[in-house]
Length: 520
Image 1: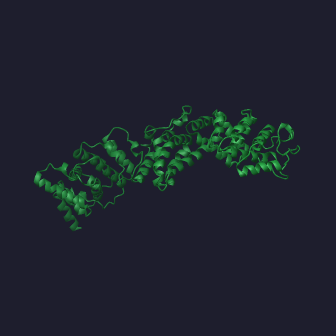
Image 2: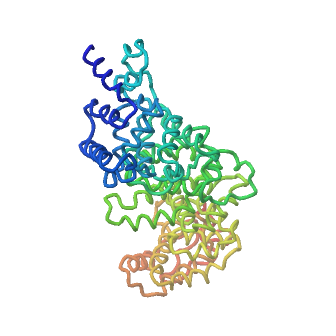
Image 3: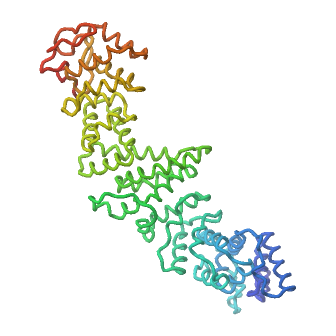
């Protein structure tokens, strides 16, 4: 203890000179070799050229040396403006890059440096009582002292540029007040709101970026700032409720795209957890944001083609879009028309894919087809949906059958065009044969399949369409042959149809070949 106190008293004699600061660093036993060489260079230059040499010092030093020195010394070095100014002067000309390292380090270490780490109090003590107490008292970084020291050492510094450069290896967000330190610092140097947009984009230090973005999204003082920052999705004017805080935050395209870009480096689970609040509180706003953000995310995936997790953000985006879209397909809310209308306008392929997933999940039920027809008619997009390349042939056929029953479509004309369509005609023909096999004709004891009911006119159109063509696809050809040769009876009453011909008219009551019995 006496040896330590003697060392402290020795340092006190030159506490406000550059030599004293350097000795302070050396005494910590953690001063870097580069810093030591640069400080020796300073003293030699002073002896030869006088005191005005600070602008020539450390021109070739790393920008993180000052932040490393401050972290070595601990919080107490930031408790005295003169001492901190001397240390900055000793480090040469201060610029925004080196200050970004300092601020990032302070944000990362706030409240986390051990209390025995620093020793500045004894160096700057002026009384015997203070000299006896060599333990540090500071437990956090004093941003007021930092700002004053920077104003003295480098009044030309741009604090906005400093925050824009926080993407450094030194950056981190302490759970014990890292974000609050940044807010307090910026409040001292500017009357403007904290610029949350500095966290957008792509960072090298992606872990720190995710932590900072999560902190800003959850902290009451910064959360509302996202309602006006950066690019935003256009929310429909009909719904005033969407103007609440959560909706305002998650309407930010920059927030959504930044999070999606972090999936590749920080993992899907970590990013998905941040989206959880939006999925719960304003799923429709997040859905619309994801739809508009998707092209940018796809572009990034192409740029990252060589990455190990190529397109990871796009995979999450597609999965979330599908999950958020599903409830709106069958919702009875008046908002459905507006939400699905925006989906159709911005990313109609996602809406078609959602209808196909619903159809597959419900195994081709009539209810799923009715949903598809309702969506199509609401948006005035029945013809466009029937022509969309992403729609499955089975859904298209059932949708056309249901639309024909509702008087919205001439089924025979549509089917003729669909069968002749290159690349999809074979699949439509196969779907026709399956409908005929499972819903119209049945082997003895075979249970009919559930699905959209089929009219007699539609049966004739399907048989004429598939039997009048020579199919190159072996599977379709074999199914057509089976249909021709099996001489299967109708599902409900009537005589067996002649091979290769239409079913016997009136074979089912009510003027329908299946009597509508195929409808769920």
